[in-house]
Length: 192
Length: 326
Image (cartoon, rainbow over the protein chains, first blue to last red):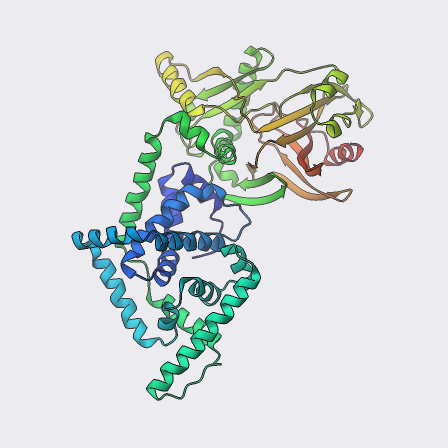
């Protein structure tokens, strides 16, 4: 997602300009998809969470102030929708039903296969994936989205001390699990 | 390798590999259209008042000022308390041409002459219907605000003591108090049920064949913004307006002016101030409107002050001097 002046397009979008929505969507789609894809535990939910994210964007575009870091604002919106989705467990059952009915899940399958192939090459991210959401959020925001711990605190609306403690705990877990995994393989790569 | 570096490396690999499948796009567009249909199905009045006021201001400013948002760049923003003021510059290519501006300005002045004191109207220009910059909403407001010419009575009508006390009898020695109005300096109101009015005016234009049609409007009593403007005039009929604006709720005011306009950020006795001069302002009889704006907080309340003029010969330095005198 390029950092550019998206604000005029957000205003036009909230006025009902379809072209503006298309532009906002094109500017953010890959970023949103990847971010959601990594955060949601069930990959079949990605498109549904994505729908929730863009619906929320349509509803709350007026709350975005120019001068704010759009990426941070949008990331906060995505995180809230992923959390909401996790809370509303019943919806996943509905989605499972839908997936059984609708054959358009081909894109889901393609993406899942794509990610599965990548997971074979990666060592840490599969471990990150298995972290509880509150720890995973901090790791993803810090090392994928490149936010500072202070920005993460603002974005998640939690005290900086909590962010630091989650960050510390997540890294500790990752180191520990990674070493276990490597030892089991008999490898000698070391991370510190 | 540190775990932090390894995480970054793997996330970068992830980013390179995973992308949004094209099939998602059609679903998102369908979602957008569904959302729009749902919005339209709501009761119009209900929908209007459910919008946050700050959104209403942005939208109406965009629709009524006649500029498109394409080619807009951010000029400045200042926020204090519950008020945020933002100014954007819009590419000159996207604004109306001088001839159109003069035509609109004259038509607005003509309608204004037909209004009684204290009345507002909205004017529709059928010939501007195709202008892309107006986004299908060639509507402009015009007002003839009621002016209170008695200084003491005007001061008493301002409900904010610290502000009322600062209304001078004269500014710059030779600009005398002419009157006060509960409006912004150019008297324009940006609120109202303009969508319904637009449809009615379009129909009237079709039925009568008139290219410029208008009707009176009644500003809502729910307006979250309150403006108080004192007017000062010299012997050459040049005007200086001193205004103060407050808001009863959280408000973001967005304005736009052509990028050829002048903008300067100034420091006036420790206060950050913003000077703008726009020579294409449709609501100014001379098309010139210059303003020095700053914000102050008194007793927990935010006030947006401005010293402004629609007289082309008034200088920035004079407006700065007015601000210093207050």
